Amino acid sequence: MASARLVRSCCVLVLLFFAMPGVAQETSAPDAKAWLAEHNAEAVRVNQTAMGILFGWAVLNIGTGVAGHFASEGETRAFFQANAAWNVVNLVIAGLGYHGQATADPASWDLARSLAEGQRMEKLLLFNAGLDVGYIAFGGFLWERGMRKDSERLRGWGKSVLMQGAFLLVFDGVLTFLNAKLNGQLTARLVPAPDGVGLMLTWP
Image (tube, rainbow, N blue to C red; front, side, top):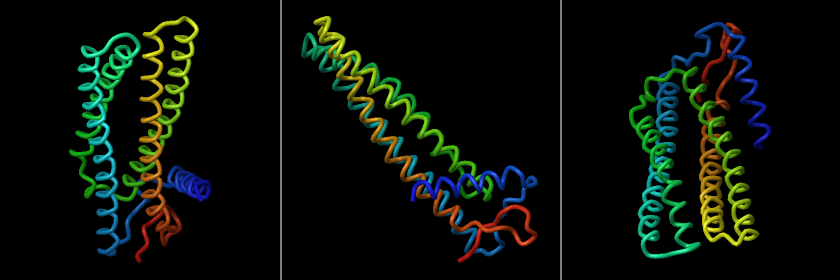
């Protein structure tokens, strides 16, 4: 199912690339325009909610990380230190992402913009998922090296990076699935325009 959706999305992109500017167009049916606006609003809501969750995760880890730094020592202290430091970056990313989604105007997006936004988000999330796998591997490396070197700091850092990478992999994986589902709902309604050039949204 996922591979079929990917092939269909690629075909849409190829058609858009070779079509003349502005050929991706909505049908004039009011119901279709209303559906597109609601579809775009739902995509923004999903991603905005996700940024809120990431923001909450970052605040939780920074708070517990700072508290844990003063309440523990050794490997546990290193674990909490890394959690706090790591999530300062998550906090910035979540804040910027939430602001971008909150200030978006999905009702003004035409069909071409809707397709472009959906594909951009899906590609970004897949790229992030690849990075998450790297974080997990690096965390495992630090943990293993800490075991060999008998370093409490490296073991604590390794456990933290591994945990943070695992969380982000699940987070990005679920968000990728939700965005791909929304994109699939949109591309499933696309048909060639009556003049044979470009695409249009069908209704119903």
